[in-house]
Length: 263
Image 1 (spheres, rainbow, N blue to C red):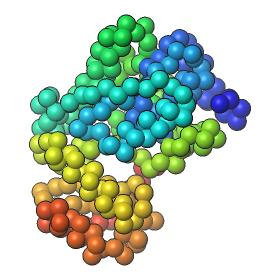
Image 2 (image 1 turned 180 degrees about the vertical axis):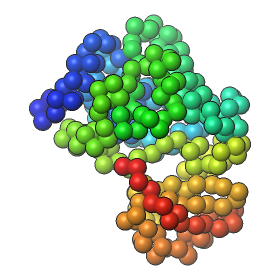
Image 3 (image 1 turned 30 degrees about the horizontal axis):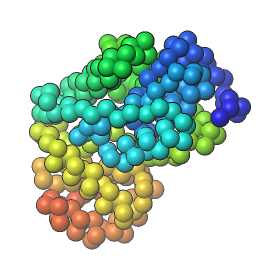
Image 4 (image 1 turned 90 degrees about the horizontal axis):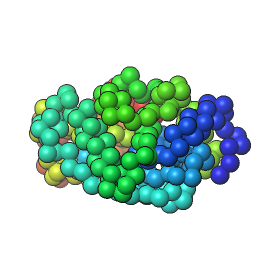
Protein backbone atom coordinates (compact mmCIF):
# COMPACT_ATOMS: atom_id res chain seq x y z
CA UNK A 1 0.00 0.00 0.00
CA UNK A 2 1.58 3.30 -1.12
CA UNK A 3 1.24 6.96 -0.22
CA UNK A 4 0.63 7.79 -3.88
CA UNK A 5 -2.72 9.51 -4.37
CA UNK A 6 -3.01 10.68 -0.76
CA UNK A 7 -3.47 14.36 -0.05
CA UNK A 8 -1.11 16.44 2.05
CA UNK A 9 -3.50 16.04 4.97
CA UNK A 10 -2.82 12.34 5.11
CA UNK A 11 0.91 12.57 4.58
CA UNK A 12 0.76 14.88 7.62
CA UNK A 13 -1.10 12.15 9.53
CA UNK A 14 1.59 9.65 8.55
CA UNK A 15 4.28 12.03 9.83
CA UNK A 16 2.28 12.51 13.04
CA UNK A 17 2.13 8.74 13.56
CA UNK A 18 5.84 8.33 12.85
CA UNK A 19 6.50 10.67 15.73
CA UNK A 20 4.76 8.22 18.07
CA UNK A 21 7.07 5.33 17.07
CA UNK A 22 4.78 2.52 18.27
CA UNK A 23 0.99 2.63 18.19
CA UNK A 24 -2.07 0.67 19.23
CA UNK A 25 -5.01 1.69 17.06
CA UNK A 26 -8.48 1.43 18.56
CA UNK A 27 -10.07 -0.22 15.52
CA UNK A 28 -13.87 -0.03 15.74
CA UNK A 29 -14.65 -1.33 12.25
CA UNK A 30 -15.77 2.04 10.88
CA UNK A 31 -14.11 3.93 8.04
CA UNK A 32 -12.29 6.41 10.31
CA UNK A 33 -10.43 3.86 12.40
CA UNK A 34 -9.92 1.61 9.37
CA UNK A 35 -8.11 4.38 7.50
CA UNK A 36 -6.11 5.31 10.60
CA UNK A 37 -4.97 1.69 10.86
CA UNK A 38 -3.89 1.73 7.21
CA UNK A 39 -1.95 4.98 7.70
CA UNK A 40 -0.30 3.61 10.84
CA UNK A 41 0.78 0.55 8.86
CA UNK A 42 2.37 2.87 6.27
CA UNK A 43 4.09 4.94 8.91
CA UNK A 44 5.43 2.35 11.33
CA UNK A 45 6.57 -1.22 11.72
CA UNK A 46 5.26 -1.53 15.29
CA UNK A 47 1.49 -1.36 14.93
CA UNK A 48 -1.25 -3.32 16.66
CA UNK A 49 -5.00 -2.93 16.25
CA UNK A 50 -7.29 -3.48 19.21
CA UNK A 51 -11.06 -3.88 18.97
CA UNK A 52 -13.24 -3.69 22.06
CA UNK A 53 -15.92 -6.36 22.17
CA UNK A 54 -18.71 -5.57 24.60
CA UNK A 55 -22.50 -5.67 25.00
CA UNK A 56 -22.58 -2.18 23.45
CA UNK A 57 -20.66 -3.21 20.32
CA UNK A 58 -22.40 -4.19 17.08
CA UNK A 59 -21.31 -7.65 15.92
CA UNK A 60 -21.23 -6.32 12.37
CA UNK A 61 -18.60 -3.76 13.41
CA UNK A 62 -16.44 -6.45 14.98
CA UNK A 63 -16.60 -8.48 11.77
CA UNK A 64 -15.59 -5.42 9.74
CA UNK A 65 -12.69 -4.68 12.10
CA UNK A 66 -11.40 -8.24 11.72
CA UNK A 67 -11.72 -8.04 7.94
CA UNK A 68 -9.84 -4.73 7.73
CA UNK A 69 -7.02 -5.89 10.02
CA UNK A 70 -6.58 -9.08 8.00
CA UNK A 71 -6.53 -7.16 4.71
CA UNK A 72 -3.93 -4.72 6.03
CA UNK A 73 -1.81 -7.43 7.61
CA UNK A 74 -1.94 -5.79 11.03
CA UNK A 75 -1.74 -7.74 14.27
CA UNK A 76 -5.25 -7.61 15.72
CA UNK A 77 -6.77 -8.53 19.05
CA UNK A 78 -10.23 -8.40 20.59
CA UNK A 79 -10.44 -7.07 24.13
CA UNK A 80 -13.61 -8.08 25.97
CA UNK A 81 -15.15 -5.46 28.24
CA UNK A 82 -18.50 -5.10 30.00
CA UNK A 83 -19.22 -1.40 30.51
CA UNK A 84 -22.58 -2.23 32.11
CA UNK A 85 -20.80 -2.75 35.44
CA UNK A 86 -20.65 1.06 35.67
CA UNK A 87 -23.96 2.48 36.86
CA UNK A 88 -23.63 5.59 34.67
CA UNK A 89 -23.59 3.24 31.69
CA UNK A 90 -26.17 0.71 32.85
CA UNK A 91 -28.62 3.47 33.82
CA UNK A 92 -27.99 5.18 30.47
CA UNK A 93 -27.29 8.59 31.96
CA UNK A 94 -25.91 11.61 30.07
CA UNK A 95 -22.43 10.52 31.25
CA UNK A 96 -22.73 7.13 29.56
CA UNK A 97 -20.53 7.87 26.55
CA UNK A 98 -17.83 9.54 28.64
CA UNK A 99 -17.71 6.68 31.15
CA UNK A 100 -17.84 4.04 28.44
CA UNK A 101 -14.86 5.54 26.61
CA UNK A 102 -12.87 5.72 29.86
CA UNK A 103 -13.57 2.05 30.54
CA UNK A 104 -12.58 1.02 27.03
CA UNK A 105 -9.31 2.95 27.03
CA UNK A 106 -8.37 1.58 30.46
CA UNK A 107 -9.06 -1.94 29.16
CA UNK A 108 -6.74 -1.36 26.20
CA UNK A 109 -4.06 0.01 28.54
CA UNK A 110 -4.41 -3.09 30.71
CA UNK A 111 -4.12 -5.27 27.61
CA UNK A 112 -0.89 -3.47 26.65
CA UNK A 113 0.44 -3.78 30.21
CA UNK A 114 -0.13 -7.54 30.22
CA UNK A 115 1.95 -7.80 27.05
CA UNK A 116 4.76 -5.58 28.25
CA UNK A 117 3.87 -3.02 25.60
CA UNK A 118 3.34 0.13 27.64
CA UNK A 119 5.57 2.06 25.23
CA UNK A 120 2.81 1.79 22.61
CA UNK A 121 0.81 5.00 22.20
CA UNK A 122 -2.96 4.58 21.82
CA UNK A 123 -4.55 6.32 18.83
CA UNK A 124 -8.24 6.72 17.97
CA UNK A 125 -9.92 7.63 14.69
CA UNK A 126 -12.51 10.23 15.69
CA UNK A 127 -12.62 12.85 12.91
CA UNK A 128 -12.69 16.63 13.11
CA UNK A 129 -16.30 16.92 11.86
CA UNK A 130 -17.68 14.83 14.70
CA UNK A 131 -15.34 15.90 17.48
CA UNK A 132 -17.53 18.71 18.92
CA UNK A 133 -20.46 16.29 19.32
CA UNK A 134 -18.48 13.41 20.84
CA UNK A 135 -18.80 13.26 24.66
CA UNK A 136 -16.08 10.61 24.65
CA UNK A 137 -13.47 13.02 23.26
CA UNK A 138 -12.87 14.50 26.72
CA UNK A 139 -12.28 10.99 28.05
CA UNK A 140 -9.78 10.29 25.27
CA UNK A 141 -7.82 13.44 26.05
CA UNK A 142 -7.84 12.72 29.78
CA UNK A 143 -6.46 9.24 29.13
CA UNK A 144 -3.71 10.52 26.84
CA UNK A 145 -5.13 8.95 23.68
CA UNK A 146 -3.95 10.58 20.44
CA UNK A 147 -6.57 11.73 17.92
CA UNK A 148 -4.66 12.54 14.70
CA UNK A 149 -7.69 13.39 12.55
CA UNK A 150 -8.97 15.87 15.14
CA UNK A 151 -5.54 17.36 15.79
CA UNK A 152 -4.86 17.86 12.08
CA UNK A 153 -8.38 18.93 11.04
CA UNK A 154 -9.22 15.90 8.89
CA UNK A 155 -12.96 15.48 8.21
CA UNK A 156 -15.22 12.65 7.12
CA UNK A 157 -15.36 13.40 3.40
CA UNK A 158 -11.57 13.42 3.09
CA UNK A 159 -11.39 10.20 5.08
CA UNK A 160 -13.87 8.43 2.81
CA UNK A 161 -12.03 9.57 -0.32
CA UNK A 162 -8.67 8.42 1.00
CA UNK A 163 -10.08 5.09 2.17
CA UNK A 164 -11.58 4.50 -1.28
CA UNK A 165 -8.26 5.29 -2.98
CA UNK A 166 -6.52 2.78 -0.74
CA UNK A 167 -9.13 0.09 -1.37
CA UNK A 168 -10.26 -0.13 2.25
CA UNK A 169 -13.53 -2.14 2.30
CA UNK A 170 -15.26 0.15 4.81
CA UNK A 171 -14.77 3.26 2.62
CA UNK A 172 -18.49 3.56 1.86
CA UNK A 173 -19.78 1.91 5.03
CA UNK A 174 -22.72 3.82 6.56
CA UNK A 175 -21.83 5.58 9.82
CA UNK A 176 -22.54 3.74 13.03
CA UNK A 177 -22.37 4.23 16.78
CA UNK A 178 -22.83 1.91 19.71
CA UNK A 179 -26.03 0.00 20.43
CA UNK A 180 -26.82 2.15 23.47
CA UNK A 181 -27.31 5.25 21.31
CA UNK A 182 -30.57 3.72 20.07
CA UNK A 183 -32.15 3.61 23.51
CA UNK A 184 -33.88 6.51 25.23
CA UNK A 185 -31.82 8.22 27.92
CA UNK A 186 -32.38 6.88 31.45
CA UNK A 187 -33.82 3.62 30.12
CA UNK A 188 -31.80 0.95 31.96
CA UNK A 189 -29.55 -1.04 29.66
CA UNK A 190 -29.24 -4.83 29.64
CA UNK A 191 -27.39 -7.21 27.38
CA UNK A 192 -30.72 -8.56 26.12
CA UNK A 193 -32.05 -5.11 25.20
CA UNK A 194 -28.80 -4.17 23.45
CA UNK A 195 -28.86 -7.39 21.43
CA UNK A 196 -32.46 -6.63 20.48
CA UNK A 197 -31.32 -3.32 18.98
CA UNK A 198 -28.92 -5.00 16.58
CA UNK A 199 -31.32 -7.81 15.68
CA UNK A 200 -34.09 -5.30 14.95
CA UNK A 201 -31.92 -3.09 12.75
CA UNK A 202 -30.55 -6.08 10.85
CA UNK A 203 -34.08 -7.27 10.11
CA UNK A 204 -35.16 -3.81 8.94
CA UNK A 205 -32.08 -3.49 6.73
CA UNK A 206 -33.09 -6.80 5.20
CA UNK A 207 -36.06 -4.90 3.77
CA UNK A 208 -34.43 -1.65 2.60
CA UNK A 209 -30.76 -2.54 2.17
CA UNK A 210 -27.56 -1.77 4.05
CA UNK A 211 -28.24 1.91 4.69
CA UNK A 212 -27.70 4.29 7.61
CA UNK A 213 -30.75 3.14 9.56
CA UNK A 214 -31.41 3.86 13.22
CA UNK A 215 -34.13 2.11 15.21
CA UNK A 216 -34.65 4.29 18.30
CA UNK A 217 -36.40 2.54 21.18
CA UNK A 218 -38.64 4.60 23.46
CA UNK A 219 -41.41 3.47 25.80
CA UNK A 220 -42.18 0.28 23.96
CA UNK A 221 -42.18 1.89 20.51
CA UNK A 222 -39.68 2.19 17.66
CA UNK A 223 -38.82 5.41 15.84
CA UNK A 224 -36.94 4.74 12.61
CA UNK A 225 -34.49 7.25 11.16
CA UNK A 226 -33.10 6.92 7.63
CA UNK A 227 -31.55 9.31 5.08
CA UNK A 228 -34.10 11.29 3.07
CA UNK A 229 -33.47 9.29 -0.10
CA UNK A 230 -34.42 6.07 1.73
CA UNK A 231 -37.70 7.30 3.25
CA UNK A 232 -39.90 6.39 0.30
CA UNK A 233 -38.35 2.94 0.03
CA UNK A 234 -39.04 2.32 3.72
CA UNK A 235 -42.67 3.40 3.34
CA UNK A 236 -43.09 0.86 0.55
CA UNK A 237 -42.42 -1.79 3.20
CA UNK A 238 -44.56 -0.21 5.91
CA UNK A 239 -46.66 -3.31 6.54
CA UNK A 240 -43.59 -5.54 6.77
CA UNK A 241 -41.92 -3.02 9.08
CA UNK A 242 -44.92 -3.03 11.40
CA UNK A 243 -44.92 -6.83 11.39
CA UNK A 244 -41.24 -6.87 12.35
CA UNK A 245 -41.64 -4.52 15.31
CA UNK A 246 -44.84 -6.17 16.57
CA UNK A 247 -43.24 -9.61 16.35
CA UNK A 248 -40.48 -8.29 18.61
CA UNK A 249 -42.97 -7.06 21.19
CA UNK A 250 -43.08 -3.34 20.37
CA UNK A 251 -46.38 -1.45 20.12
CA UNK A 252 -45.78 0.40 16.87
CA UNK A 253 -43.17 1.91 14.57
CA UNK A 254 -42.93 5.47 13.28
CA UNK A 255 -40.75 7.07 10.62
CA UNK A 256 -38.96 10.22 11.72
CA UNK A 257 -39.70 13.13 9.38
CA UNK A 258 -36.27 14.48 10.24
CA UNK A 259 -33.91 12.52 7.98
CA UNK A 260 -30.75 10.92 9.25
CA UNK A 261 -27.93 13.15 8.00
CA UNK A 262 -24.63 11.79 9.30
CA UNK A 263 -22.40 10.60 6.47
